[in-house]
Image (cartoon, rainbow, N blue to C red):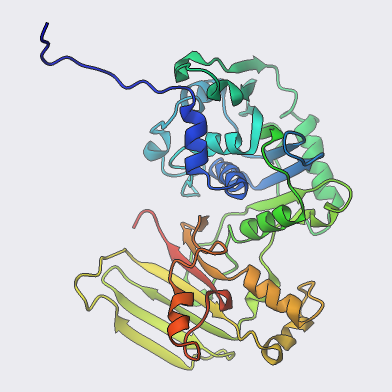
Length: 397
């Protein structure tokens, strides 16, 4: 029998969750960054990333604690449990109104799937009950079940973790008490979220932890030049806690490398929506050696990208040029160590509303093609590993 105007409906299989996780999250380092961004969107002032041994594939765990406003039972059911919810598009700013939210795509849940085989999320909002969500991501990958046919364990109980004198209070107080360099952070204990990722999907060693610290250190840019008038970044600190043994020395608050504060050359300025640029070039002195006023859209085919501000920091990598940096508190022992610090922080990073956009500026992602230009003229052009750049844009513009 012929049928006209019949309707059919798309219905996702449960394994879509793992497929999206692999496609949207490029690696474990980016996955942890997504969870940190979730804490930022929740107005957290402090995030703790704790590695629990053994840090081998299929074993161990990672915990991500934050003191954000947490989620109520209704929010967990109505927002977190909904894939591609329009919540962030309807609410582009955090609850406090002070932060432009970063997690507009809602991919934080996929980040937890990338990191561990199971995830346990405990969260509490002030004056609400505590919610615990337990997910075994293997349940979504096995069989031919549809997404809405895979149950997830969800319980609502009297608070025990996020309550005065509870586990969260003990965890944060021990952290701030042990380290004198801790930021002056007012840590709430009756609200927040902890994500426990168990049976790790990959091993974590020295190289992986160091790469994570470098990535997180560039989440928040170093203080920009005063002349750029970039809005102040809300108070936000990240602490990495590693187990006793060979990884212990990696524990500490994440901060930008001191080396970044002392470039040999610098390009600072702004470009407005019409392409009019005002740029100043510095060569070690407080006064610029040259000021450039020009329009970068003389070719009408070039698209408008909205206003932006930029701060490019450049070094000579010869030993004689970087030897003075040894006097800084960078933990470098010789010029080779200083050179490595510069290379580890090199690349042009992009910041939207004060927070890093991945993967711009990541190792190997030379999106401006510096290295290719240098091949054609090595005596005139800079390599990507000589430049630490910061480009500031706004989602509103």
